[in-house]
Length: 194
Image (cartoon, rainbow, N blue to C red; front, side, top):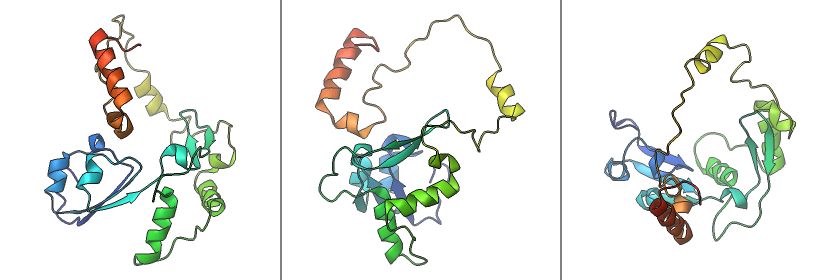
């Protein structure tokens, strides 16, 4: 879905963990598109309000997970508390949908089966805490090295582009009264540091 191409052939938009600020169109344009919108996520913002169906997912602190950092190091995240109300792990929601959608039911009945499949697709997921070379950016990719090493270092000091970065791009921060107070305090002092 884009502002230039209304993707007339798309009847359903499935938004998984997407924030309104990550879309190429406004929420108003999305609502007026005539598409059936499914929102799956942990923090309902205006996208959840615009959706025809909301599937409540757990936040990162409410589910087990695997992260791969910029070094290529896989790390496990463990849930700290149970998700509220009807919230479920994202993989469980998708697995349940596979039972009622045409095609095959996904063969993952527990986290162990899901982890096994993840390790098949991403071998670094089996060596938690160790740095693995990237399969996506080969170390001998001379073109990438050439592009990343181009240019001069400027002596111009860094200046903040946006003083209100606390509230932009994150539904949790936008919904927090505490973050609103922090943003107000920092914008008054015109500093990015408390």
